[in-house]
Image (cartoon, rainbow, N blue to C red; front, side):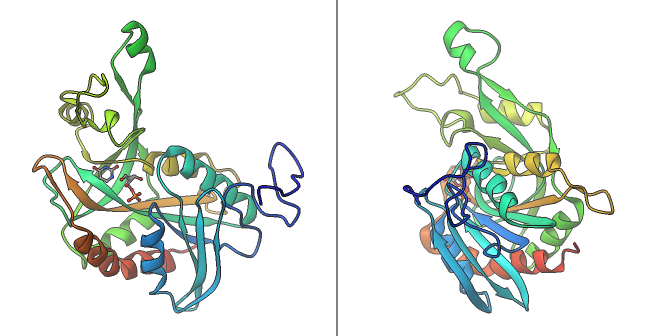
Length: 281
Ligand code: R1P
Ligand code: URA
């Protein structure tokens, strides 16, 4: 792919029709997609597909696995971490899949509520937490900025919450999508000046329903809302939901073990797949 011929600067495609970063083309990605950060999580989940018909690892670190689950085509796409990776994934996938897209993010998060390590968070909405660079330059404004709430798709969120109840305690609320694992999630240290003492408490005060912090959900919900090409019932063409496992307990100060995280992913996979398959188009 790096040497491929690009057919335009606006939507670069290889000579065989693959998108520049995710490297998929029509026919390789299903309308129902689970997106995760970690490629290892994608491979563990893929073991619960009934069959696998396509698998591709791109030169930019995106892994796409497409198969059948209960006779329904379903893709799992591992995207790595952060807002830009979610943006690449959603936009480039939209370029190669016709018709409605249902996307569920199944990720990990830090809990800023009563949810403990191993519990499940289902995002009713997401909001951005972004570093305000001007504050660090001239002291203007506050060090971090919060965006307003962006809701997930209602029916998909209910399906996810219903299925996840069999996996463990489920907490619902708003998820803060930070632009860093460190500064804008309130992790402190001496190496950098981040002006983030008390950030978690400030976020909870500003956003009363805030329950967790992670790094992609708001971008996903935002792109779903602004997706064009409305369906007949006036829903947007991309609909999105998000379920997260609590890996870090930011109030109790503990972090999940690798064994427990694998166990939780295996236990939650069917609930995620079932929600996507039950979701009406
Ligand atoms: C940070 O460790 C990563 O974990 C979370 C964050 O959003 C960030 O991507 O999600 P994933 O486990 O899906 O990667
Ligand atoms: N992912 C995050 O972004 N933050 C956490 O604390 C845990 C997982």
